[in-house]
Image (cartoon, rainbow, N blue to C red; front, side, top):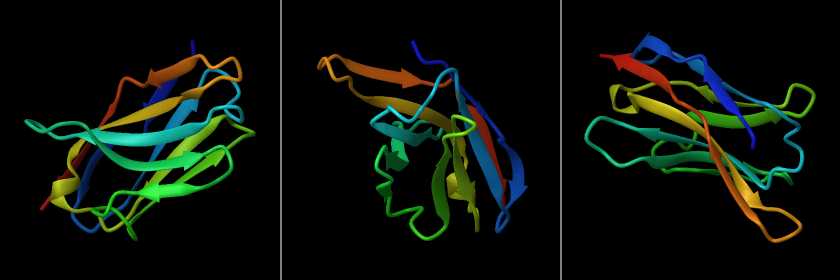
Amino acid sequence: QVQLVESGGGLVQAGGSLRLSCAASERIFWINILGWYRQAPGKQRELVATVTNTGGTNYSDSVQGRFTISRDFTKDTVYLQMNSLKPEDTAVYYCRAYGSRVSGTRYDYWGQGTQVTVSS
C-alpha cells in the first residue's frame, strides 16, 4: 500500500503560481505512472498531467504550456508547477500512482487531495 500525501494548495489570484507536492510513503522509481488529477465542484474528476517511470509526460489541453509535472526520486515526491493560473483551475487536486507490477497485479493509489482556489 502506497500512501500519497499532497500539499501546496491554497488561494491565489489569477495569473499567479502554485507548486503542489505529493510525497509517497515509499520509493517511487518503480511506479509506472504518477499523475495529477482534479475535480471541480459539480464536475467529474479529470486528468491534469502524468509522468511515466521513463520520464514521458502528458498534459490535458487545458493546462498544456502552463503546468509542469516532475518527480524527484531522492525525495520520492512528484510535483505540479502551476503557472498563469485561471479561475477555471479551481478544484481539488489529487495525486495518483498506478500501473502493473511485474507479477501482473495492478495497483492504483490516490492521495486525499489538496484544494486550489484561483480568484479573479
